[in-house]
Image (cartoon, rainbow, N blue to C red):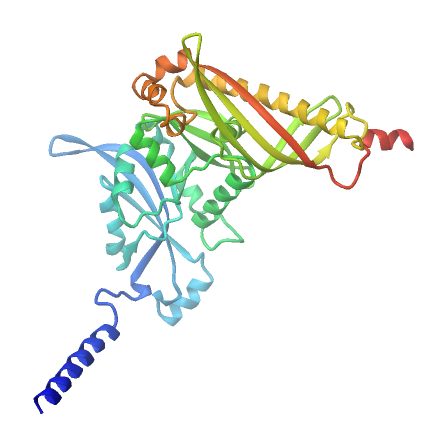
Length: 397
């Protein structure tokens, strides 16, 4: 009898415990009570005086996706005709306080786990972004893959740019940034990579967005940060060359000029390795770059047809040499201008402690002395369905 009572009591306890688990999360919030932050723009404002001290002030634009359940039926109908997002513009001395102000303005709890884009204003970039990244590195909701771009125009212009493919400007710009990194040989520019460079106190490049005359987003430059401050701008060709030296090679187009016009090669795959050495008592780095490509356009007259393997090999050697010269010029120019590890060598030299420590401790001295070799092995795996060039076809008519 006692055993039966004990079993019944155990069953009741288990039933009560299960009912608690099935009741839902204790801290559950309805979706309409959350502000889903997808974009964050931050720029510098004139400092403010607080208790006799000069306090840094920020302008923060927080872009929130409007959910269907966040309003009444009448408001929902009005919302369907509107943009589908809300921009909160806040002035604050603290990033955390600024984001929390959303609660007082919209009665919704801000959630940053959906953040897709961080936009750095030009004034902020020039003043320095240490404080900003201190917040992002510590905040537990932050995603490593969040895209980061720099700007040269007022922030609000980027947070109101129209898009037909994405529901918000932030998602639109983040999609463009991700696309150009994968298709135009541009380096990655996300929170994880930039945070690592800031912690290591090494230079880094942030993709830079501008607006063309039609008000469309264009990403074709890079902003160089040194000691977490903006120190220069790189052209599209320079950041593409850096991307190849980094080894961030996915897909993209290579263009080569000739007397008749241009030739274009589609990059299918590639990688970049480095070989460190000491030559004449000076540090020496050899970049070995391997590229798999296919021919997409050929307007030149130096090769009449591609029906011979020797002709293909001649073209591969020609463009390998041209790319080597191009990369050498970029490496020389950036070394002279920045005298720092803009080439991300420290992240690739940890198995060579002597050279690694030299770059870490005395970067200016290292890059004043170093010499560089760049070897490119470019292979053309596909020339299309036509063996004759347009020059040959024209002569045959």
